[in-house]
Image (cartoon, rainbow, N blue to C red; front, side, top):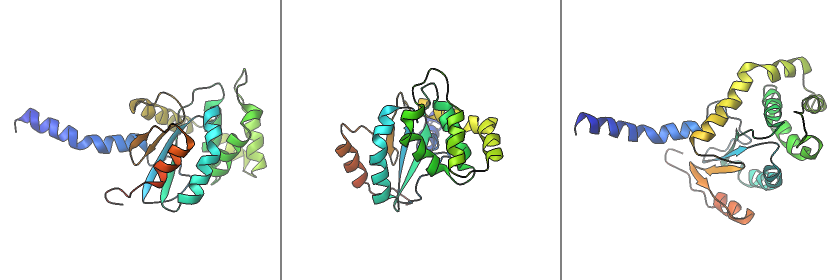
Length: 195
């Protein structure tokens, strides 16, 4: 091999790991702790299609969550999307990520598709969950929290994610044409190397 060939071989060897890092960061929220496979969803809490898919994701989590890690990544595309993601992250800092995640989808019709970004309602949800509101506000307003969401969006763009929901199963993008296709794709997972 020439030096150029060595460099190309090194890049090729590094590429899968780089792609995996783009898919799942160390701080990416997990809805379940399964360790045999990873289901990654780039979502927007204000996306109607994401909300419509939510009950199916809930069923998949219940069925496969002990084996499959369901990982959330953000692709905020609407007026209140960023604030919704900030609310989820701020709730997560107090151990209530899943609860806020579910609440945002279940009550999307209360806050979605408004003319101005929603914020106060998300604070009401946090209070309903019994969160420490001073801590919630600090985490919601933290530049570090915003940076995690922006990193998620940048990772999605680098992976070619253009809309939501976009899903990956063990690194492979899923392109289901129906809910049944999605359920089948998750049901057919095989543990990857090293799992």
